[in-house]
Length: 219
Ligand code: A2P
Image (cartoon, rainbow, N blue to C red; front, top):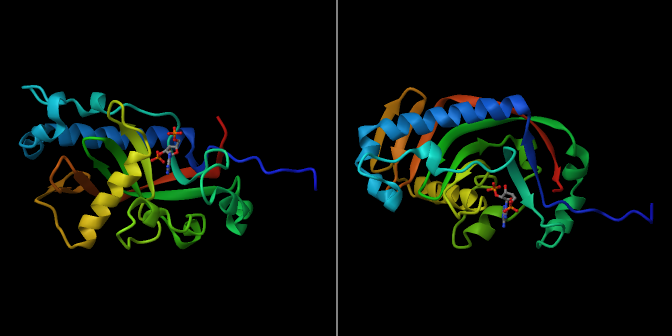
């Protein structure tokens, strides 16, 4: 009715159920542990600067967890961000608000700044992905719609979670340029690639499916 006014959230996204959060954290930890013990990784400890001691680096301690696991679609800052109001009015956003979705995690990655899970969205899920999200992050590139989709697993000290999506787009850009990585190795969970500067991407053999609910976050 006319008295209703939209209440904008801090951000919109898919929120993982309790069980899927545990599952994802376990898989993520396994990746960090395996990676941390690899000789190939040890050759590049330097990428992590002072955090790497003579005995190496504990990745599980290096990345700090941040709140409930989720895949942000639109950061809105309570309606203050450009495009936030338009996003709220999208048919798909209204239609799917509070709906359950299964998201597919296709990989895990780390950089000296962030640790994240790469999310591959379906066509239906892409209806909830805001136009221009990739362009806004990387104005000089033409990266696929939805290629920024991720779940932040942790951030290095003093790094904001927003950085995870930007880091993922760096990988996407390198892949688009046809780079196969400076090193490649098959490990238990999948194919691991090193792109230099502390950038490691694991492409999972078995994708991880997580249960989520789409909605807004109002802390
Ligand atoms: P991400 O989605 O990469 O995890 P904060 O706690 O900083 O307010 O952020 C809340 C959520 O919104 C986080 O999940 C964060 O990153 C995401 N986020 C924050 N700022 C932005 C932004 N400018 N663009 C896109 N996502 C953002």
